Length: 105
Image (tube, rainbow, N blue to C red; front, top):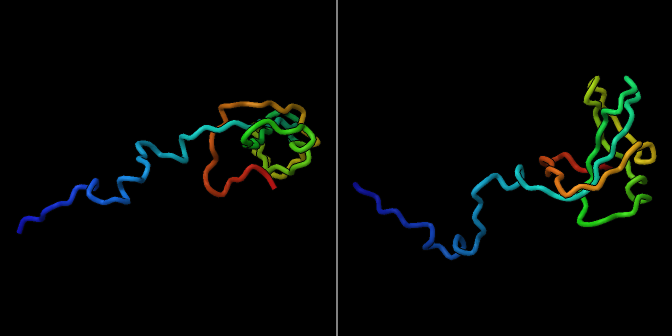
């Protein structure tokens, strides 16, 4: 018995849905801020946090947040207050995070 396949374009819901040729959530880039902290365990400046935003935000607002961070040198993980950041950089090349990895608390 031969099955007759219906082309996807025959469904109206499929016609209006956006096409995804790539992994949308993994390859999407955003703008935001990258904060650099000094590690409380090893003392190196290898602790980074990302804060996605739709536009420019005040430094006071960025520093008022708590960020989940980990050290690239020794592997320490924990929370860091934005007030202790040694550098805040704005970028338009922020990689979107995977589900469950929000910008901060």
